[in-house]
Length: 282
Image (cartoon, rainbow, N blue to C red):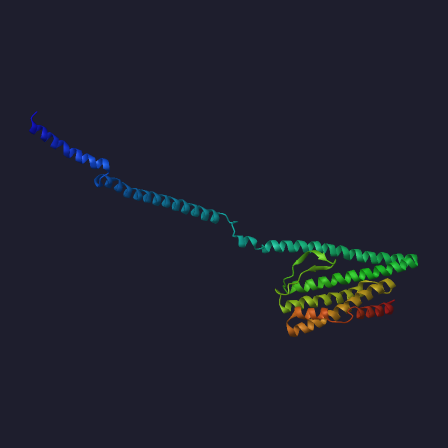
């Protein structure tokens, strides 16, 4: 091979090596391609995130749609606030059940009081024994107190219910006779007056029935009559002033509190009237 040909071959090989060297050294021409790929990767990840977001939104919309359909299809589905509210029908049912239970107890107590009084009087009259007389007078006091207390409470309750007052029956009677709660805030002044008037009215009605139905010519009958009369007097002396003042002030709570705090003997007038009735009849 001639020298000129050899030189030309070297010249041809030199450019190829020059082009290979930058490729090995990471020339700008070769590094631009990875940069282009790096720019395309975020676009691919962004599109994937967007697709995931769309799928999540679609699933959420489907869940909300199914929840709404299930709530509409279920009539028993209620909010927590609605669930906490008492059912008026259930309250009425419970109130009637309590009224029947307490009414049964008071009816049994009434029959027991009358039977106890009658048995004591029969024993005293038939035997003539002093112990029988003392026992029969004791049963007359017990029967008179029980009958007057139950009549008074049922009079209050009847007055409240006739006026449409909020007066739920208690689950169990308090102190044997108190049977309902009168809501001072929920009820009006007229409803309070109706409730208050019912108590003394029932006591005086009991006095009238005792005079008609009970043989008051005996010591036992006379003491029974004296007991219910004395209680009616004390009830009237306590409640009539409250009723009269409440008509003017329209503040039953204050008038009742003032009457309870007022000084003076609350039972002495009834005791005096009762003793007078017993002495007059016996």
